[in-house]
Image (cartoon, rainbow, N blue to C red; front, top):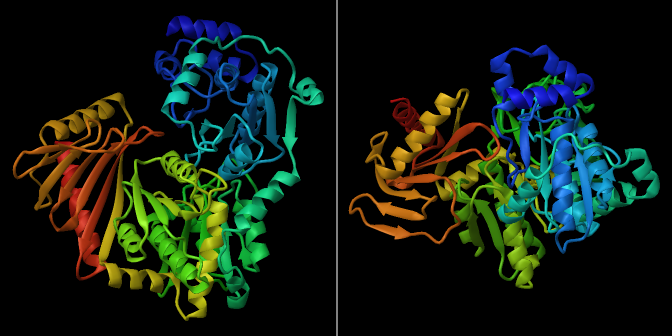
Amino acid sequence: MEKEFARWLAHAEGDLKKELQAVEGDRAEIARRFGVKQTFGTAGIRCVMGAGSSLLNDYTVRRVARGLAAYLLGSDLPRTCAIGYDCRVNSQRFAAICAQALAAEGVKVYLYDRLCPTPMLSFAVRHLGCGAGIVVSASHNSKEYNGIKCYGPDGCQMTEIPAAKVSEEIEKLDYFTPDKASFDSLLAAGTIEYIGESVWQAYYDRIAKECIEPQLVKEAGLRVVYSPLCGAGGEPVRHVLGLLGAQVYTPESQLAPSGEFATCPNPNPENETAFAESYKLAETVPHDIVLATDPDSDRIACAIRTADGFRRLSGNEMGCLLLDYIFSAYARKGTTPKKPVAVMSIVSSPMAAQIAQHYGCDMRITPTGFKYIGATILELEAEGRPEDFVLGFEESCGYLKGTYCRDKDAVCTAMLICEMAAYHKLQGRTLLDAMDALYQKYGFIAATLQSVVFTTPEIKAACEKKLDALRSDPPREVAGRAVLTATDFASGTRRTMATGAADTLDFPRENMIRLELDGGNRVILRPSGTEPKMKLYYTAVSRSSLADACDTAAALEASMTEYLQK
């Protein structure tokens, strides 16, 4: 570690060298910057920015791009790569470094001419026939983070096998190999080419086809408060909502792209705090719905004004609303697919499966990660029936309608939410009224999320130990509710607690445990794939009210918290 620090101190330049000089002799800081090995996985690399091999900086970014170039050159894939980036500090710089590194190795690079949402990059990979894609973004993380997320030729995030090959190539490379050519010379030679307006327009034209009854927005005179949370959604979301005829109001403090996130330090629409500025604006303008997208505009959430404030719909609730609306709109238009297929992650609300069953739709369950939803679309394409794909969603506010890209898309979803809100407005309802109707029809289900952050190695080790203990000796009850089955997705086995009998699951292996409780309740535990935390997903069911279901979910969380703290 000390030796690597000295090597970086000798080779680093500019501000990164000054940063290292400032921590010379500080063993704890040197350990933070060099003590953790950076790993490239299916989500690429996401970490804090700064000088050191454990952090994200010019040298670690360039090394990743060169590894991707080596992988492409050694494969049968097209030697082309599309690159996009969001609003974060250094995102544009890192995108240019990636473009330069790839192009210098002989890979043709298509670089977005300005910041763009992640789904637009996924679209560009497919539209331009590229062998790979890169998004420079840390999604909804706080401002000190950034990341390099890589995509395959299908527009999906890289899966395990290609990601492992890229990782292998990265490990062969040194951080300080000099550049072979300048960015400007590669741009002049045409090896780097900017993605222009034609691709933006092709994306807009394609997602417009996903609207079912777009005229409803004008008919309803829909009014929207929308915030891009200082991110990449500002231009495209406002553009498509304007085309629909919606009246859009945006908080001025969050309209311009900024990686500082001054008024939304936690720029994640899953969190209530991200809506603070939007709520302030909504108090002063007439509106029907409030929307917010995260910095790379692949996640979106919606809130509705109530008598005593605002209520933000959860990712699960919006997924259920969209699924129900799409099928009802298809029925009105007579365009329901013959064999419709919807997809949701395993941690999402079981209500969605009930809605799918009601409409005769095949609901497929995947592991967490939108690449698995994208893989389902690939399967449908291989079967010659991509038109049967209706909707894919995750509880973390990610949705996709259509097969034009293979990642969640908040731009297209914003259009769909507005169309859906307009439909219900014309019927004299709000989205909250529509959600309450679904609860009355399918039962009251509360789905909540708890995160245990690994602030120290000791906390991480303790949580991992608890996870292992759960595998070997699951609890017999949680919050007074009997555990019926305990499923270990890492080994692919499900144990029936009453008998001890075990059976094998036909499901991809994942580091996750699920406890099925009586009354249809459940607890799922899994480490995050992108952040230093463990996530606990609670699903609680009630026959009487949503409040009762929420109370049960809170009791489950309290019980599991006590278990983890023992």
